[in-house]
Length: 352
Image 1 (tube, helix red, strand yellow):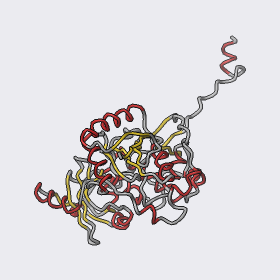
Image 2 (cartoon, one colour; image 1 turned 180 degrees about the vertical axis):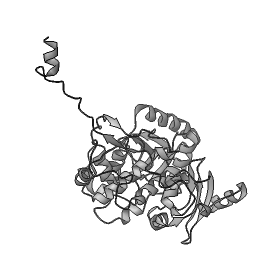
Image 3 (spheres, rainbow, N blue to C red; image 1 turned 45 degrees about the vertical axis):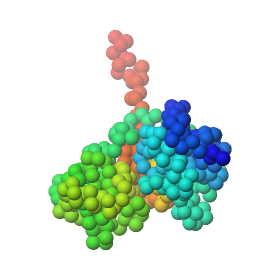
């Protein structure tokens, strides 16, 4: 009996893209049929505004989810890169049916099951309804493209001390603009990274949280070693598939402030998200923070209260989202100056 793939949480154009890829994919593997979100396996566009909410409901219902994303693996059980191709979809469906997802595609996660009660987003699914669209702000202080990886210091959260090659925290190097285009980094604690600025990719550990101390440790420019093509290929093969560089910069922003806003922003600064961000399984409360921020511009204290999280965690989240271009500062609109009273000097002059 053929297995069924459902589709939900995507706009009409994306749905048609998936249907077309599915039609071609079934020519290669005819053991699947297309259905709705009542199927046991459902495809969701995780890059869309309500895709993560659809994933949350499906996950709570015990269904497996294929997450479509151009930014790499998401919280979903399996990852299907965008743009969707028939070959990639056919390979994924065939591997799922065989019980062996291909390399680079996350198997059904066991990390979720290991989370303490109350920390997985699905534990509080009833508390999370889709947030209304945020009203457009009057003025914003920065406006890089939401989907583009930052390329200059001005596109990101503050770039600390980039005028020399002296020691500074690793997160500062990652948020700055002084690194050579393609380098290797080895730190004393065993951390091994490959960073390719031109390709917008990096190679290294899949889990981010264990790298927290390493990103706060200092390094100078000499620690970043350029590699020739052969050495790069060997090192990349040992470290595994490439990951989006934006993910590493996001994490650099997350650990940079250590619970405080970067760039000297005061407590009454308004922040907003431009789009729904990709959240990491290692930080389950970020889902609540993102939900609160999608409601519109707000201060750190207001976001913390709305998401039932600490202000330090909200500040770190804001820093991280600014580092990868997903969040911005909103400047309140200044009311126009009031007109002078009719009986004032101007009025008397008009009366002459």
